[in-house]
Image (cartoon, rainbow, N blue to C red; front, side):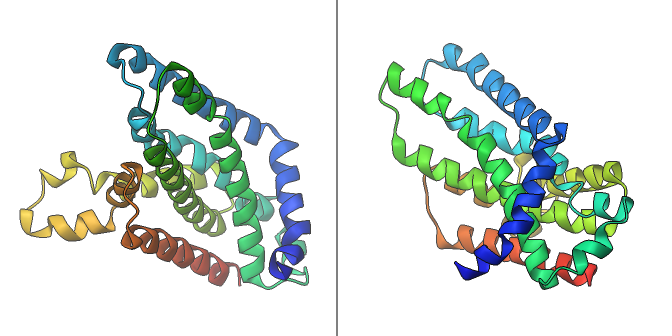
Length: 236
């Protein structure tokens, strides 16, 4: 708790940046509109009280949302020359990175909270299985955190937000596509397993189906920790 308390001023500063500019409103607004449209466009055709389509669509929509949230984390600080002021705060580089990470993650979680109208609607229409819904929301939170950690590292490497957005989207897409059937069908079968295990899609899909496997949680936490560590080393 003491660790989080020391980060509160930085987290508040980051949240103020998001919500005093169009970034958060546009990103969250587009995410909610697109994800609801994709879900309900097929929902009435399928006629099943299930959120499986919702969780399948989130990773692709994240490719637009998460890079937009993370692109300015350090790139904007360097562009407007406030990075020096940031680094003089009585906080370690790791805590600065973690503070920005928490702020971005709170924005992502806010976007997910606004989609809770979907399971509420399903509850009125039928009897959805709440287990897969809960684990599905856990999965999209972990995936969002992973993509955000990638965005922070890329943002620390450049002072151009557009470049940061593009590179982050490409890296996250590669994490996603390497576990897809489309990709695996086009590479030798002998290397299927390492690509699958390295792909965020593999571990995300497992959790989204309602399966809580320690290996999936370790995968996400390990990569998130790695990218945050690399970000802190870069800004040093």
